[in-house]
Image 1 (tube, rainbow, N blue to C red):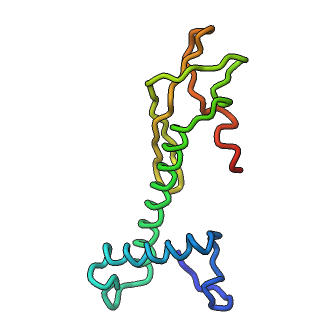
Image 2 (image 1 turned 90 degrees about the vertical axis):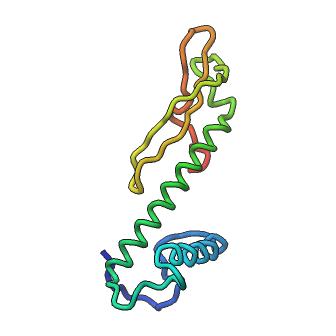
Length: 138
């Protein structure tokens, strides 16, 4: 629920830290989304309660966040580095098989196809998603 807070009243008083370039593009995207949600000029009907506007904005924002995460992990899974394919001193070989991975996030369920690999010596399947996968960006 929204609450009025103090500050300078400048747009710089945001709680979300994104690059200036991302902020500009998000403002453009928000304008486009308002037109899709409210039609015409993208303005809610006069008298629409702020809580309704907030609810709609949160739905759009959470779906954007969910799709952002889903795209990121799906494409990351396609680019597994060789070092992530090592298990117990053995390098796994990539296969054409995948396994659907699912995570429940604050924005909703995120799914992607996790590549399956094969360890020849030990004759076992290996999904390179253990500790360290994606850690280079932390």
